[in-house]
Amino acid sequence: MYEDSLSYAHELDHNDPLKEYRHQFHFPIGNDNKPQIYLCGNSLGLQPTSTAAEIDDVLKNWQKLGVEGHFHGDSPWMEYNDRLKPSLGRIVGGHSHEIAIANTLTVNLQLLMISFYRPDQKRYKIIIEKDAFPSDKYAVASHVRFHGYDPEDAVIEVNPKPDHHLLKLEDFEKAFKEHAGEIALVMVGGVNYFTGQRLPIKEITQLAHEHGSLVGIDLAHAVGNVPLHLHDDDVDFAVWCNYKYVNSGPGSIAAFFVHERHHNEDLPRLEGWWGNHKDNRFEMLDKFTPAPGAEAWVMSTPPTLAIAPLKASLSIFDTVGMDRLREKSRLLTGYLEYLINELENDAIQIISPEDPEERGCQLSIAVHNADKRLYDLLLKKNVVLDWREPNVLRVSPAPLYNSFSDVFQFKEVLKKCLIELRYA
Ligand SMILES: *Cc1c(COP(=O)(O)O)cnc(C)c1O
Image (cartoon, rainbow, N blue to C red; front, top):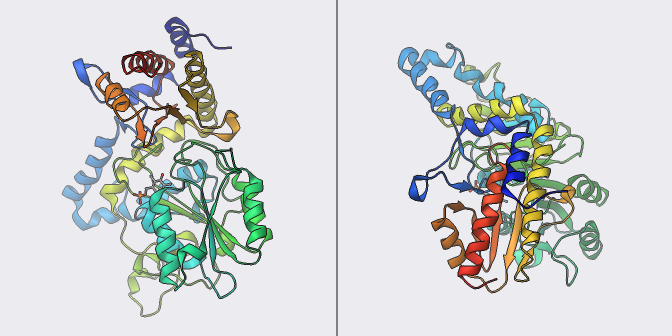
């Protein structure tokens, strides 16, 4: 279906309905004054060209209006957050009232576990996936210890079957059987950061609910990358950052989802004045009146300057739409896979799933016996991707701004580097 030539890559670019979006992003300039071949959107997405103006708007309103900026100007700060929720909702498949924008990912994970991890003597274990992101592991382990349990006993890591490196639903089934009646929470990634595997959220959630457990999903690598249906899939809660595929800048404001089923439950929760219903928030009452929906979990005044980049980014997602993005993504990552396989190099193994349904845009490529010199050399030749010890390149062509030519050029550079370092 594909061809291994630059002219073919150009042809794919020419026919790409999303090709113009590339120009809405700043590409970093690398060596020899050339734009980098940037395949690192899984770590930090590129800056939209509209971001600076969006931040500047907030600054200008602050200059001109002072405190009145909360209520006046074209984007009053009081409503700034709320206006972005429909866009985020379309990306994650949630209703606006199920979404809140606040804090950062790990902080939100800790805060939501207060509500959704309520262990008792019988049911106190948490399932996580093999190769879970370290921050999630630390969060889960520390939360378990906070409740007086031992992570060694209470944190169950689900592993693939021997000789497999990807997870299957039956691996989760096995864990539920082995720990029958003891699992309080399943906390897994929507897309695993290491392998790029997209986990079956709907099936895992159904399985967990059948066993009386709750489900939290970490969407750091899934949001803006793969189709999501949090509400319909019945996920209890989800957390994500917006600096990877959502292109909102380093350490940008994060967001979370709480299924509406839980909105009126009497859950334990850490509270602050911004989670109070906006109708009487400023009456400064002694008693807390929860805001309807996920907003009740927000504690502080939204940092509008920090949210401006998210606004800039989401307006791009609004015009593209996840369907078209996913369509291009499958083609683009498929092309990357094809080119890597065309190298016919036995030292290389793609450890991400072969089935496009089971992955997002990232391919994780293990290079037998390679070390970090490979990454360094790629960078010297203007290719930016992500290196994971011991020998894995994580390559993420982002369909919003990467081209088929980017992918082709990456393959050419990789080939050279492999020869130069004698991994070929
Ligand atoms: C990137 C990432 C994080 C980062 O957490 P922060 O709190 O934003 O630093 C956490 N979990 C996963 C799975 C990630 O991929």
